[in-house]
Image (cartoon, rainbow, N blue to C red; front, side, top):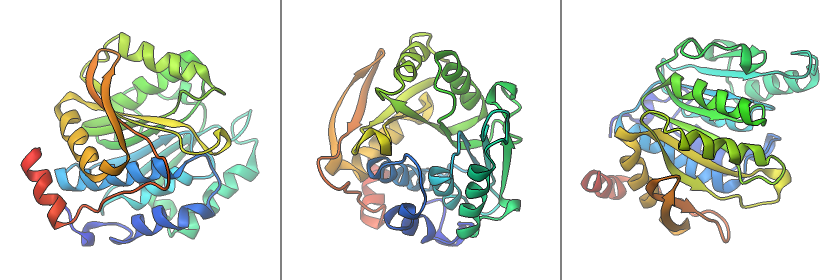
Length: 273
């Protein structure tokens, strides 16, 4: 395994503690099923030796942003962008709550950069400051079709070779244009980007929606194999999507069941990837 607990910026147990317990202290639309699979994704990146920064378009109060931060290794940085109102920054309460939530988890200003602006003003290939070296980026910004397409392109341009996009609000009835945009994104064959996994919603729409993980072709098969191993108890089936084969869907009939990436699963993972 490429990284050890001592490499983690906030300690080896911080991500697990947040995913299993502390996340409930932060308001936001991130459900337990997504938490389980994203936790596995972070572990798989450690196993595969994927390093780099993390980012989110649309941070709100930081429920997912904090999780991404707690997955960081020493020397990595988090980048966020959010309007926080119209005009940008007008909603001071949400902005202040975001910063307060980060501070509660010892995420200090020198660990992250926050852009209080519309993502339309960001330049593809220049955001974030480490564009081309991001390993996880969440897209949960403006839900209009053209905006989602723009944010997906912005996110893809930020990724390194092993990077993953976490696309939010797939199949969300509140925001049907997000699903439309994701289909259009893949119909246009976005370079080497491929769908990796569907994460079903497992709660009311007020608490979140389904997500889609997207990665480069060179890593897609490895991520699929790893997620099917670590989250096998919640694997519903694998099916084609938008012309791409064997995309696993994770569905949660009860509480999500995530297996640890321990010595036994690491040995299996090494054999199958």
